[in-house]
Every structure is written in C-alpha cells, then in structure tokens.
Image (cartoon, rainbow, N blue to C red):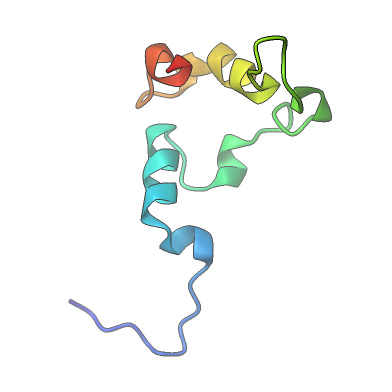
Length: 76
C-alpha cells in the first residue's frame, strides 16, 4: 500500500466512505455531478403535503438515469 504524504490535503467529501458509496449508487463521483442545473433550482426546496421533499420527487422523476438505485429504494 502506498504511503500518503503528510502534506496531502484530502477534501472531506472524498474522505467520507458512506458519502462516496451513496454517490456511486447514483452513478456519479461527486455531489456536483448529481446536482444538474435543474436540480439546483429553489423550486425543489420545501415539502409537499405528505412531508416529502420536492428534491425527492425530482430524483424519482430522474430515476431511470441512476443504475444503482431502484425506484423502490428511493421511495423507501
């Protein structure tokens, strides 16, 4: 195993294993890749009548583009 230089700076988002795994399930390497221009719109902020975020509904509508995550998993 290669030693890491003590002066190497690693971004926190790259160091979080669970964060990287979740993003990999969506087929992306970082949050910026998941959040396209449409996703960043403020219209998706907030909750609907069932207390489900509008971001959740947006992800469900895009589900077909995420090979590692099924619609059932997103709904659960």
